Image (tube, rainbow over the protein chains, first blue to last red):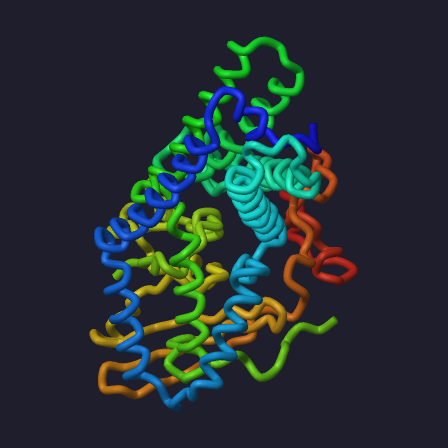
Length: 252
Length: 147
């Protein structure tokens, strides 16, 4: 199962052109969704205004080299290592889900565009596709059932869904149905069952990408911008937070 | 003058939901970020402001020490046992204060649930739970029993 390409098996029923057009359509849906979201929430305007007020409150001018260093720090610490999270459980769950999603997404695109009609797909791509989906399921389920503030802090039932859950539910459903559909393909237990599971996979994946204006999908783009702004404010002296204390009062 | 949450800083961890004594800090069902559901009931106790690991919560401070146009910000440093305050007055002056809040490492105090349940006859005792051991004294004075 881990060495077979689900999309080359699907090519027996749907042409690779259909699959590629679907991927392009989903990319367009995400771009359009993010642009709509930015306009609707006026987030670009918010960040521009915040940058202006930070510039006015700055105590020192930052050079291009300092800004580049802050950009690299933001990328490495806040984006790649999810450094903003205070608790290791939330951080690990987020990293598993985020890296799993990237791997799952990239390998899907590679297999659809490069190997959709090729039954001899390199095993690295197929194995990574499975690994990505499993990482999303592990990190996402951990978050959904145990770490989500609605469950952990508000003590709500895990399956009580709200609008804020569209993103995580779409992500979990897409990964889960992808794996189950592929397992059905391999077991060859009837075209009807396989097509039903494929339909569920297609529905959940479409839900994930077309609901961007209503889901938390766009936080992938806003959060790095907010982290970068926060670091800029701290470095230029514009931060409104107190200076860190000079001495520790903890007696070990 | 109640708390408000900066949504771009909040990561929805729920620390403020846990700590709010008035039970008015909750998670927004649309954005999954914290928000104050009933500002009128805010006690301005600053518990959520101090607990927030992202420094995403702010309160407009009491008018007697920080009048309109001001800003009050808090930084809690668990590893140093310090809470620092920065007050920006509306005339531009800035004052900073740092207060030691504890001397033992964060999380080192045992929760009540980790102790054995006391025997029922302890209810007749004048001592509070874990006294006198927890106070590190041999004994505490007690009122004579009523005859």
